[in-house]
Length: 428
Ligand SMILES: NC(=O)c1ccc[n+]([C@@H]2O[C@H](COP(=O)([O-])OP(=O)(O)OC[C@H]3O[C@@H](n4cnc5c(N)ncnc54)[C@H](OP(=O)(O)O)[C@@H]3O)[C@@H](O)[C@H]2O)c1
Image 1 (cartoon, rainbow, N blue to C red):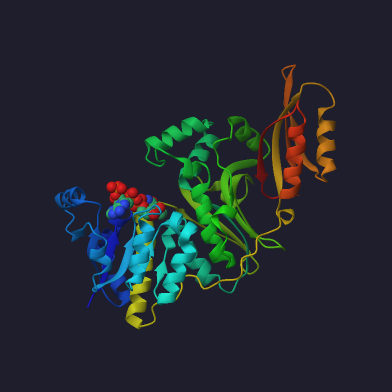
Image 2 (cartoon, rainbow, N blue to C red):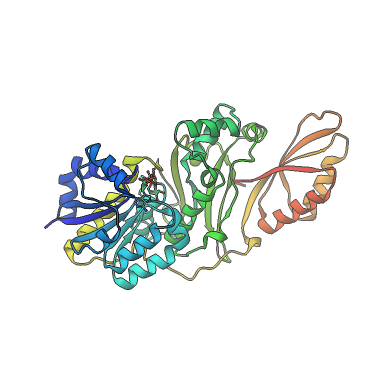
């Protein structure tokens, strides 16, 4: 008897599932010890149903989710609609009706995952979501299973393909942010409203999920600080290169003495850092741990087949457990009380770019401000001024978030200084 699947949504990712079930059917059946059948597919309305049937998709399309969640024959519901609602309601209904659930919905899992995971646990059901972080890279299961013996101390990730494509163009070809965004939209990498990608929100969702798998702590989305790439100027990119760095949007989750910290921000990566060579739409997750040391998981963070591959891996895992009679094990069993880091313990080097009056003594004034907060310079670059203003770039040794805020406040208090940008610098 085959294991029956109900798909919610038939867009980019969902429509990649039949390809794998067909082209890799023998291996999938052997791994699960049973066959999978797509029993029903939920679409929005009859127009969509008729369009898909006319295009040759020979499935039992339904327009009411109850036709799936109340169907006693369906074992696994696969939610691939995206967004919070109605996905949250539909997943909840499915779990309440005793269905196992697979999803790739990072927005939902990062913001409402606790409730859904709790419900699945109470019901003894599986809720798996490998594709929610870095699409085709099997990083969640790697953290949950292969790294069980290891203690993760920091996870750094290039987690958003759209912004990484844009940053690659800005770094390699000197494009402006606006040109890079326009091309990303033309190529279909960026949506017409690109906010989630370029402002670091999508990467912050993934950081929330990584914090659970890497550190056993469920950090709230609101506690992930996120800064996007929209303020990065060609000047910042050029200076980074001159100083031996590449700028990328990096998610950074780490454990300090006082607790966990998660940030998404443009980051100066030393050119030799493995993440610095992750280009275009590719993603990578770089894990620092006490056992393995450093390891990096690299691959396509999105795309139909890569993402569907992760979704089908979840389906197989559930199918196999149904067959073996031990289904219901949590996707991630590592759980500890969540403790947020004290900002004084979260330390990094920082880049400051600012304009100052084009006259003698400005570096001294800056040195006094930074010294006053016990922050030392690692590099200083002064660009030729125009007689009125000069630009100065400072890279500091490690300073804490508390020191960072204090330095910024003092710089802003100088009416003749303008702080143009400040970004994290890795490796100092
Ligand atoms: N695409 C990727 O590479 C990728 C990578 C990793 C994770 N994901 C995640 O995977 C999920 C699916 O992404 P996708 O790219 O496949 O999205 P998509 O192409 O937009 O597909 C979603 C489909 O669900 C349909 N839908 C929306 N609301 C529905 C409803 N109430 N009832 C029935 N159908 C509904 C949409 O119809 P309309 O178009 O008419 O709204 C669309 O056909 C998302 O959570 C996404 O974040 C995607």
